[in-house]
Length: 250
Length: 348
Image 1: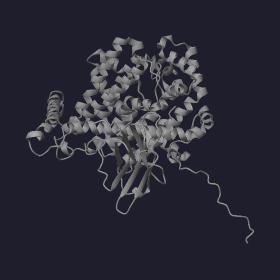
Image 2 (image 1 turned 90 degrees about the horizontal axis):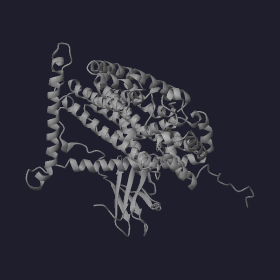
Image 3 (image 1 turned 90 degrees about the vertical axis):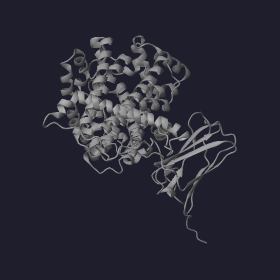
Image 4 (image 1 turned 135 degrees about the horizontal axis):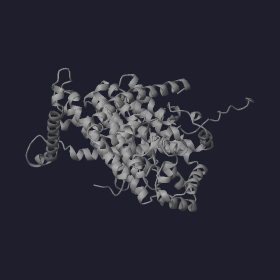
């Protein structure tokens, strides 16, 4: 029997991922902090990582919610044309027509203002002349082709499988699917309140598609829960997951 | 980032701010001189712009336009407009906050009274519109109209943000979280300081050929880090360089991240005392009150906490910069914008 000391795996430096990308980003290192800031930072160093993580999480949740609200507003304004001009389609076109009319009117107003205030100046030799109306892109933008604020491509290739006893609504924002196998979802944390996070969130990548499994525990309090899709190696967010439990607003 | 690279990026930011800031300032002065000859109100309105700030917003706007292929001349009217609107906000802010100083000199309402200062602020708003109308000669009616739309949104977001902050102070709201602060800052500061200049610059550079929401995240993180650092400077900065009354935020009862942290961490009796002090009128706050707030902040590590949050947000800004500008070719202007998250933290 081998009497040599048993080999042991060395104790790892850490057992959980580094959740802050700030440490490897180019922001100034703490030693650059002026005066007493350095001492204070050192004193609170154990909290710094948690503080950073929470701040970034809060900030991303906030800005994502803000963008979603912007998208909803834009959807209400820019109703898609149905192709026809009668019935329901015509009714939907009314706000869009109004917006275009207002835009045309304002542009006409600007034309007049410019004629009054700058006309003489532009006409002088050597002065810059007004660019043609179509300066920039050749074709005036069609509101129906406008990218809506915050709009994302449909998440082709990603299926979301939610297991819940109650009503839920889930949405996933992910721009880039090229590296989906390398993504890890975070637990879904409540946007407000002290409810526990929904921890059972997994991303299963198959050959042709990816499936995200979310298990909502029985009795999970109603509310909005948000999580991130992080890149496994860098811990940088690539997408967001938003889940509404119960009491859905329609 | 090593020390050499950090120093290089700081130098770049200073250079670009000086170059584009001077360019915008020259156009601004020429414009103000033209208007000042007509009516006295424009001479008063010219006071703050002529004191000259850092010109961050104007420089950012020009740099973003150039990063997307435009010339300085394409963007300079927007830069001038932005500076005028920024100064209009400052005049009104100083009245609302009862601030005594601005850029190292007495605030406009301290010099001329509230009514006159208010009117001068209004004049700055109107003056800020003219360069946008004059854009048409260079950028065409459609792009000029889009810029007006963007400006209207920026002003709306800014006044909504200011309304949130004023309501917190009026109603002495103390049940606030970090998220509440960030939501207010997004509107009050980020839109006109970092989001709008970037969007306008990209709009000009691409002649409205780019989806602008890609710049919101970057601008939000950058602007929030900027605001937190600004709040920190109000507590611990150098008076001469800061140009405003130190600890003025405490006297005004501003809900900074440090105050929010104090209210979260303080004992119930301390919280009660803090709330009582914050609820008083500025003139009713004694030096002892301010000293107590400051020493309690020191004891609870509020500045360290805010500094950590600012650093984290600057890191996130850097990440979002890389995302938003991924398809933009390398240039001095792009490097300047990418260096801003670092710069906002090292301001003194």
